[in-house]
Image 1 (tube, rainbow, N blue to C red):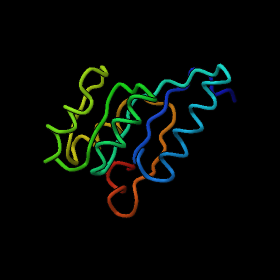
Image 2: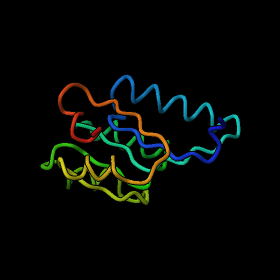
Image 3: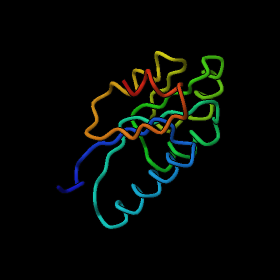
Length: 115
């Protein structure tokens, strides 16, 4: 099966598995394989989320901590990314239309969005 044109969501883009997934997507893109990213999420790492958004250009980004919505919006300003925060935003990211979802949220926090 070809990866070309398949869309991806990464739940937990700032952890080791999420960063590895980001690297694989960039490698495939460098080979000319289009992999649009629908959504990315992070726990509280706004800088990591912003870096992932600059590199992957997702349509939606969510930060798990609802208190971080304003700083996340500020960090992602100008990137053309819709931003959400809190558990509902994580679930929205997971529910958005994507062909593949990398569930890389650590522990019990990842159960709801993954389901």
